[in-house]
Image (cartoon, rainbow, N blue to C red):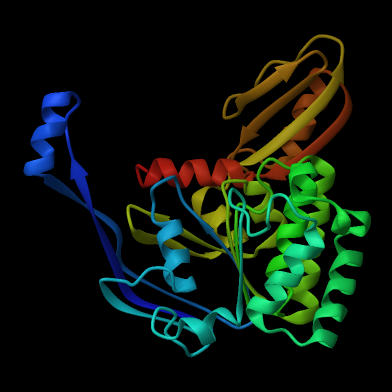
Length: 324
């Protein structure tokens, strides 16, 4: 279980104007700004839960992850992961966590991937039998194959990210922190990584905290999200409930033949092209059957699809509401 209780963290950032004179002046007398990264942040994540942790850049996501990993010490409040205080019991704590940063690597650049795995085994003191079993399972599930014998510098981004995830799981951690795990990946690699993460959570009950700006990752992997902004938790709940809370609007995409139909009052045109159109509307004002009947009477319909507000639209609405 992960427990955050009124955690606060403030950074002191040096302030200096441009120019050589100001640089010399700041060497003798510096001014500082206080940046409140976290302000009384509290939440609880249960064992085996997979949670999406989202927010704009500078909201406090990375600071939260670093405190949970034991890299940073909070100025106030308490953080416990699996009963331990990360920054006080770092050696015991890191044996039970795995961390993947999408823009940083834990693999050695010029050596084969398996050599990096061997070194990580020694760092975590993983028993030989357990290590071999984990490497075999991870290589199969993540389709590593010959990649293990290849120097990291020659790998594509998708191949390297699969190896990074495998490296973080060699010691069978109970908690996995994922920071932008699919950044820059192609569609095939993203689907493979998402499938693996879902299976890991379902089969081994690994607690997973996912931090990302890719809302498709959030929608594909998590049911619960935490929204942080300006160092405070603004929303905490199930993704489906938050969608309803933010907007009851429906999105309808139609494909038609002939002249484009007029837009009915109460509908908003979102996108249009040759033979297709996307509109949004509130079912309380225009029921879905009536909307379909309207377009069927206006034009020759070829196809109709109706969906709820997308996760990207929901997050954009929340950012707008909280002025983030």
